[in-house]
Image (cartoon, rainbow, N blue to C red):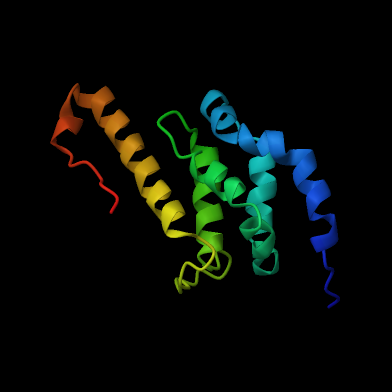
Length: 142
């Protein structure tokens, strides 16, 4: 198996997709389908040898995490979860549940994942029962 080093081409890749990556959360929130750039990022994340590409662009990881929102469609939400699981080293094909230390996710990104889900759950609770989310404790960062 031959390995290809894409590092010299990374600036061109990010230049071409940077605005789409930046707009990804709003695109997911307003769409009933999964944006192609989200699919591309999930594919990149599914190959551990490409994780350095994502780590070189932490805003791309943040944009994917921000796709977890109250209006995210199921397809995009599942893709976002696959992206996160890939970065944690979970092999979705084999069903392996071995999770590596989150070396590909910063503490701030882990917090962002929790914050996005908390907001999603609070919004769903508000829709279902009016003010049920008022009983949830606020997340504080120390």
